[in-house]
Image (cartoon, rainbow, N blue to C red; front, side, top):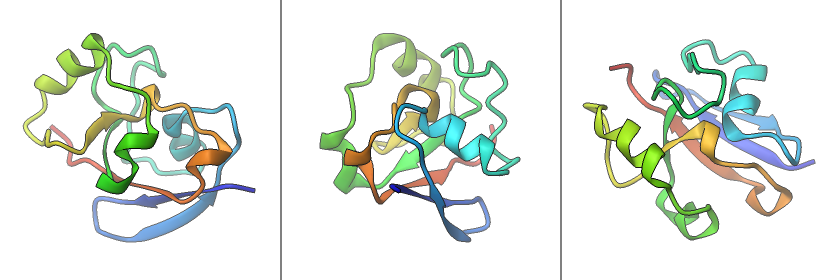
Length: 105
């Protein structure tokens, strides 16, 4: 089974099993990372599932759409590696993807 590597806000790194077809947000939430709030449940209407994706993975992810970009604009912790984890569909091709949960705004 494919793995998603999640780094929490304290810097602890955990590899979790990741099912194809879920979003990165769902995988993180379902594995008990309570610091990722995901208040809207994945509807792309908040930015509480903000993560920083390791740069080497950017080319393998779908492009950010305008709604995601607008929501991330409201974050004080946005950088070039920022994404909303609800907008990243996980697949076996992303085995080993490493994301860091962004600091809370």
